[in-house]
Picture 1 (cartoon, helix red, strand yellow):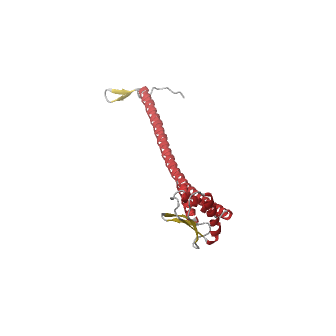
Picture 2 (cartoon, helix red, strand yellow; picture 1 turned 180 degrees about the vertical axis):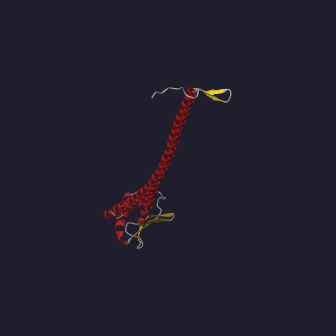
Picture 3 (cartoon, rainbow, N blue to C red; picture 1 turned 45 degrees about the vertical axis):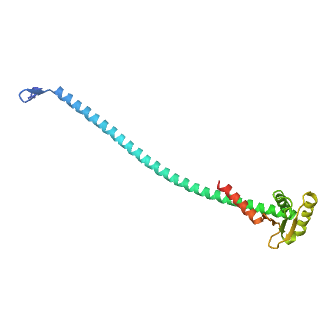
Length: 207
């Protein structure tokens, strides 16, 4: 059996209409161009998708950071409040200890020399009033003998003419006194001194 090779039953060029024709080479070129366009579109879509995904991730990150910063700020606020409360409590304890120490020192001083503060106050008054003006020194009954002794020493050592009278006053606690003259008075009040010290400490703590 023998075969005879015949040429293709159609031409190697395609005719479109009466005046246009497209060759195989042109079709291949167009296909290649379409492939490049499809590839470029794919790459662009991929890049756009990556950009959008990155933007989404950044937005989520920013949201997470904002939430974390708010939580941290709230925690710091609570810490500051607790620290301020602790600081205030420590300061208050320190103030109480200072007052207790002042009371202790005052009690020791009163025990050691009950009339020392009265003698100092008397010296201040004598330095301010006119010479010879009568003074009345009111003290608790248990301090009368001791104060009379310091008055005698004052009279013996002062060249001025002094008029000093010691008066027992049961309403005054030991260590307190009231020095009176016609133009005024000076009171030694342990409670008043303690209140003044407490106010001074409170002022320092508030500063």
